[in-house]
Amino acid sequence: MEGEKNKNGSKSISGFSKLNKRGKIKWMVENFFKDPESVMHELMSYWHRNEAQQKILDGFAENTISNFPMPFSVAPNFFINGKTYCVPMVIEESSVVAAASSAAKYWMDRGGIQAKILGVEKLGQIHFRWLGDPKELEKNKSELQKKMLHDANEIMKKMVARGGGVKEIKLIEVDASNHLYQWLISFNTCNSMGANFMNSCLESFSISFENFIEEKKYSKQIDGELELIMSILSNYTPQCLVRAEVSCLIKDLGEFAGGMSAQLFAEKFHAAIRIAELDSYRAVTHNKGIFNGIDAVVIATANDFRAIEACGHAYAARDGKYRSLSKCSIDDGVFRFWLDIPLALGTVGGLTSLHPIAKRSLELLENPNAEELMMITASTGLAQNFAAVRSLVTTGIQKGHMKMHLTNILQQFHATESEMAQAEIYFQNNSVTYTAVREFLGKT
Ligand code: MEV
Image (cartoon, rainbow, N blue to C red):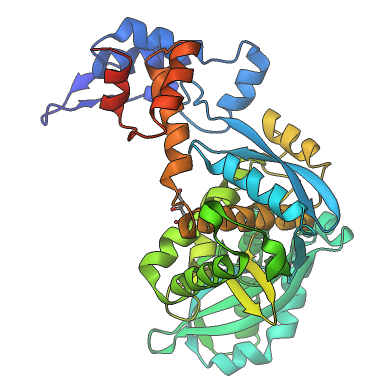
């Protein structure tokens, strides 16, 4: 269990995972830090003071040495489908929560956000090679499906009792020249994101499939060779879709910074969305702004943000070109702005109730079901996107951004209350840079 230097001069260790937490930190700080004592002390200062809570956090991953704090914020005044929410957000970027809150309030005064579920279908795949006639598989599909469901009854019965389970099984030709096929299986996983459920079902289905083919071959009812390749859910869920939308008369949009009229704002905003629909370079930044809001809620509720991101970006490129996820129209004097986004979220299972703060996030949202959480999350993405594009076509984003940035830099220099107040005035007309703030404070 000794740390050692390998031939490249880098440090390696065997048996690291077997060390206790203190041992892990000790090895790490001694090998990678110039000031091991103070780093060890600092890392340990982030341990939860309640040992039982810390044990829960440690259990989420492997080789855990400490906790990584992130701001847990809330954005109030989200009026969605006639109900007011205070939305939990976990994000490290300044201005994001302020922007979401400001846009939420803006739309609250204009009737709020309308959201609706367009689908809840999740997908799984069994990939295999079939050296035989695929029509034979198609012919036997319903019999096979019955067997798969029967064999997986233990895994599925609770989900089925809740109204979920398998909805459809389709045979897909992936690459006939290499005999590659897949069973594409659609699920309803009710209020859970369902990854574990689907993966357990799929692994069980694949065994049933193998047995089914063996039996059919034995009784000479089918001819062919099956080679299973893999069984796993698909994180691309274009039919697990939600729409969030805002609209009002253009004249009710109000006046914007610098006296910009509602009409001019609507036209510039509409053009900005059109640009993001047509230009992938802009679309990526535009959608990143949407995910500022989406990810923050997804993380706050302990959902899987990597799955949500991967799916959202694939959806943005569904016609072969990466485009904006949001759309805007300005017809007949009405401004309409909406976002369609696939969000495979859960409010039960996974870490949703294990993570102590995620549990509070869901409580703050009054324990929504998965569909309600999809609508809240999409609405936050829409508000975030509205706020970003509103800034971009009016004042530019740096004004708001730099104000927050200034606070962060001042805090790094341990500025006093009075220095903070003076700096705020001074930097209204001067650019905020790290050096400028340091000089302003007279620090070296
Ligand atoms: C910054 O985190 C997000 C924005 O760049 C989004 C956008 O450009 O629409 C402001």
